[in-house]
Amino acid sequence: MNLKKSGRYMAVYSVVLGVFYIIVGSVEFATAFWNWFIVPRDDLSLLGLPGDDLFGGLAALVIGAVFFGATSLWKARYEAIGFVLVGALLSATFGAVYLLILGADGLGTYLAYLSGEEWTWEWLTAGTLGVGLLRPEIWLAFLSAPLGYVALKAARQSEEGGK
Image (cartoon, rainbow, N blue to C red; front, side):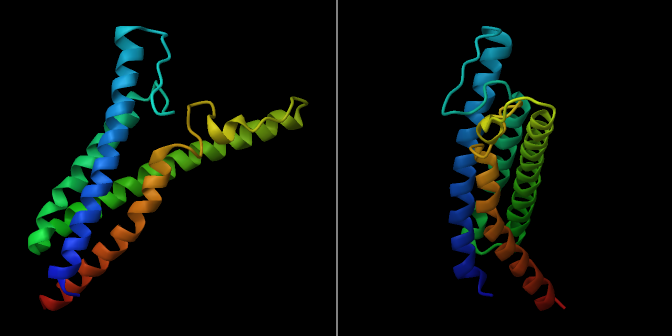
């Protein structure tokens, strides 16, 4: 794999993902900080993101910062592949956590339905923890998967070339 050409694509893709993660993380962190410390119980929510996920916002900010570390791939530096791999791994991990929370909300709704409560589809969009299919971290995890695959392929080829 020619890292000069593919490295530029990976660098641009990483920066774009980093920008999205920084935006999402900043909004989540700022609204949660507002709701927790400035005006408690205000329930401010921006861009449809939950207003009480301070640590989810912080995690998104960290993932965005890790993706920004891959900018030296533009100059075909193999060391930067690690930033892409770690960013994709963190992105997949947090995406999986939010999908598990979504599944737990769905299971809870189904069990409540079996006990006689009315069925609602709210768990799909909001859920008990503000986690639903509209959660951007889930979709960003899917978007980072191809980048992680290409970076893993490039890392394996550089390892084989070093022998």
